[in-house]
Image (tube, rainbow, N blue to C red; front, side, top):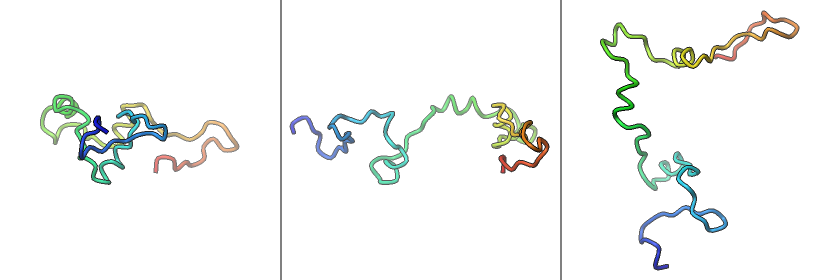
Length: 91
């Protein structure tokens, strides 16, 4: 008991070992009010992601442009009974 800090919330496994920070459910911890959400990336990294220049002439950042940058494009299957059939995987 002398090693415990008063008021500190400690998460342990069923074996009594401490749960590593990487295995914790951050969404649950924030929703239950154990602590506030912290910033995942520092300010310099976030500024590097934002396009430079006037926003009216820059390429918009949407889920579709991010998918194009990652080469995650959806298309119909080239096999099967009808390779030209419609797919609604994107929507």
